[in-house]
Image (cartoon, rainbow, N blue to C red; front, top):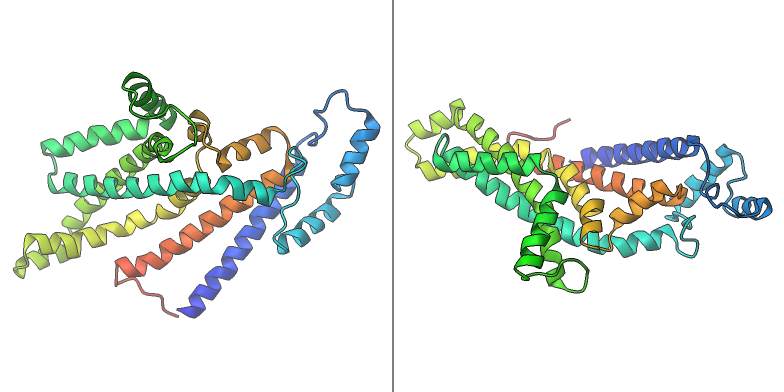
Length: 306
């Protein structure tokens, strides 16, 4: 087990290095630089700015400097927010993004799996069709549409919750529900499909023939084994939850990472692009690593051997 974990960690580091390298060279392949859009700035000032941030050096030297700083955990200064470091901006935005993201993910997984289980147990019944309608709506309609609807009804019309802002727990409710809606629909769909497939398996029929109660068969055999495919989606879901959603954060004025992520691309902020991309890739690979570890916990048949 320890050998497998060590091997996976090495693979994760290689993947993160590859993503950082590809992002670095693709980013510099785009025409222009962070200061080319500063109209009216004298050429001498632009040259001094490029020299200050090392953009006048050959690309391979810039890459070597980037890797050296990365090994020390230094992502550098933002090229647009010149008095702030990328580390500081990520640390400032992470709590808000992670808070609404993780809570919405937990709510989405719990509610989605519950609906999926109930729908599978009532296959082709009224509740099953009801869940199908919810799933189709939840997957088809973008999250920003739900966010606008929630704002209109809960904040404007009924005045139960605040429209936007980040001043207390009540301001988190609408962003969390908006993000959780898509998670609920997705997990309900996958759980129902997986459960129906498992319920037709030979070992489930055998368990019933041995006289086990319906509850025991469902909990110990069906739900547990049906959860294995669900774990596959844990990695990307975790990444999206932690990094946040730019659209939702913009609609509800949440001071999270999402805004920095998009702004950095629009403004050619090289260091911020690299920082947010690296952070996202780390969360994704860690999420997939956790998924692999959970496989063996959920399904005892899955074991790591030599």
